[in-house]
Length: 401
Image 1 (cartoon, rainbow, N blue to C red):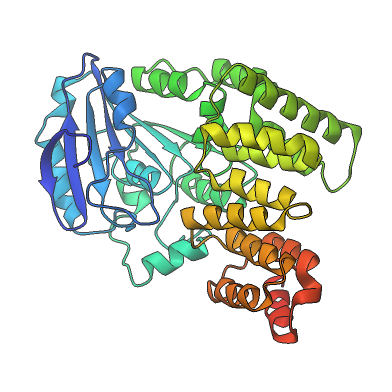
Image 2: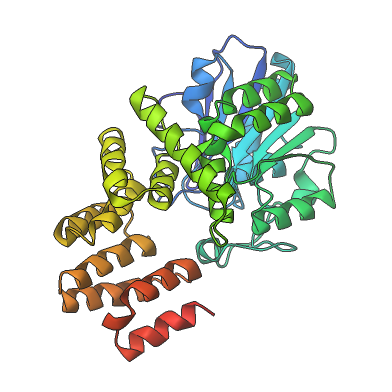
């Protein structure tokens, strides 16, 4: 496995690695998240974090996006229980994000967990009583639910779930869980799915994980820290600015100005951007081209492979330098070829350069991806409607319904 560790189980779908040399008395069992193309050499979830902090860790690693509904989990659990973690450590926390959070919950009883820390978890494979993402549905078609939340989630562990309450799908899963187990819900507005990057931007992820594992987490203290952090949190500012975007107001403008000010301060101080894409989107929302492009160029020096920065540059360049806009859009698309928004930005730039045949071929490819994101298609239709033939226009309108 990537980044070392002792492999105690390896099958076709799952591996289990251990790093138990840590100095702390509390241990963690992690589960990897869903990935676009998971590899067999992927690292355990949070491996560097736990290694640096001296926290003994067991990493359950998925080789494909199966939501842990594979027969090998029985052997993996047996290998973990043979370690006698309960007898060796003061407490055990299962930990994961999204698909990994589902595993952390569903196997918390079998792994004798004292606590569960789950970011944006799912209640059940295929949703069952809840919603299920269309992309996940394609990945999990034909899979059978072997392990159920209500059967495998511990009845004695403290369960903490971090979630963005504005994400309806995630909230539906949480409500389904709450029908079966008491859950401490940490609400992080505008945190998105999952809200870990939000917490990283506010330097709150490390103290949260540390305190949960140590058994010292205090909800009131953490929520006070979360509220105090909002003013400088780019993801929160971006979310609030978007919420005010439909009806322009002084509050919305002030939020955008505050976000741009925070970006400038971080750039001047050489600071990190855990969510550089959020910074790019704030610049796109709040700056004219003459201000935006220097900021985006500065961001790109530190994050040259961030598609959001490249795409924002492409949009600003379209009116003044469509050839350079096309180059930036193509670079962004190389980083994520299945992203429809990036592909449509390439098409827009091609239309602007008069490359009509190439643009229509690119649009046909975008339509074949079956992405229904209405806001993306609506924005493209507004910008390029005059360049489309009737069939393409009708196909796009179908995605708006």
